[in-house]
Picture 1 (cartoon, rainbow, N blue to C red):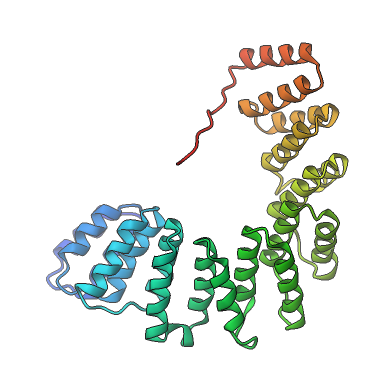
Picture 2: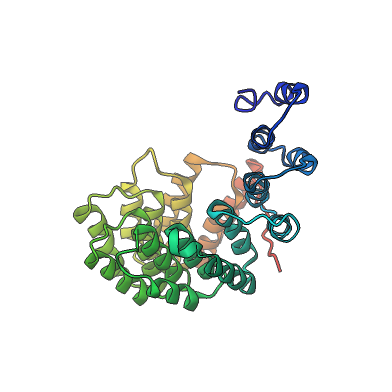
Length: 337
């Protein structure tokens, strides 16, 4: 109770005063600490445990995975198996997979896949197979993801299975494979959801298949009655913007419901205006963005570049003066090597 409400001092006091503790007691306290961001404290409590269950290990491994410390998560996973001799369960594996994906380590992915096969997890839990498909794709091995999916009988595949492989194909720009898989999913009687349509719209956007993308967007709304969210609208706007169809992209942006609209879709359109040197739409888009957020320097810079691209240097100077007056800042770009 104290942990759920975030009263960790009180929880620790009760825990410390207990004359007897079992594994569940330790796990509840550790879980509460992790929930409120006290992972290092939770780890120190975990290290004091004389008898640890698979739940104890899974809680701390999941904590490291969630705060983007995959190496610590995987080191703990190995220690659980090799030192304590505790066999992971399905939840432990599903916790470890994101850590491996974060590192993008194919060898590690293959190693854990072998472990899963040996222990028979994939035969009893479809979540494990789906997670492996997703893991292979995120580690850059779409061939293995595709093979794993193909080896599954259709009766066993659920919507997550289809979505996982389509998402992987979309990441690699394999638009034909995404479309083929989507059509096979429909024939198999599996109803596509928001995730399926997001994969196919993303693939169409990056492959320049505008008409196909618009057709799928129409199918999503009209045939399946799904309400697009901001990501679907963003894909369509990006797709039209890349193709230079800025008027249509602007119309789509204006159709986005006010409760879900944000500055990201307008910045996507502004970027397309910059690429295609469209001043008029660029000005309208910039106005929209500034109504939402006035302090982002990147918007002014993009509009300035549009003016410069068509030789309107007086407008460039005017925009630069506006940046100075409003004390606008632009975060410097950087890359991770």
